[in-house]
Amino acid sequence: MSNDKIFAQGMIVKDRGNAPEWMIAKVSIKVEEFIQTLQQNADNGWVNIQLKVSQGGKSYAEIDTWKPNQDNPANQGYVTRQEQPQRQAPPPPPPAPFPAGDAIPGLGSEPDIPF
Image (cartoon, rainbow, N blue to C red; front, side, top):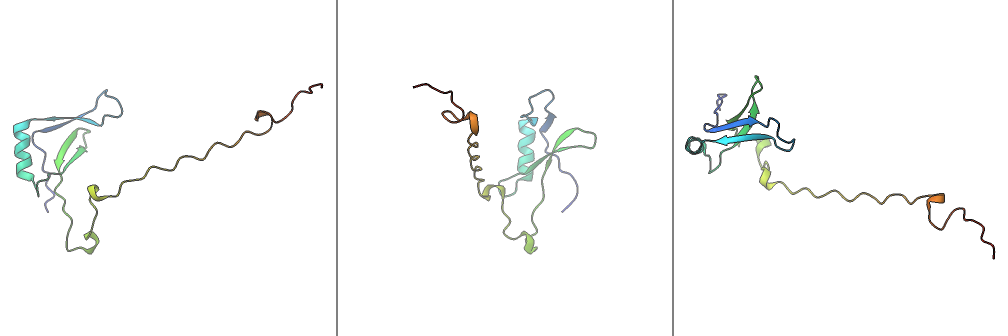
């Protein structure tokens, strides 16, 4: 595999600027040019793209050409993101401790009530 970068032509990644924290980046796609990029780099119907930051601090999109080495036993049976089991929600926190002493209604010091 070559170490040459293959840029996702027709795809421009812009920093989020003053957008809210939950927005990672803005992406603009020039349709005709991006379609050519997809067609030229498709592998089994997929194109993987990595969003990166250059040494100069500018965001860009690069075609991810990495493939597992099938001859390496360590790469046999690797799990793709789609095949990973879904994470279960954490259990709810335990109930708060019961208040002690005077904070418990009906317990603690009560005024003397004459009969």
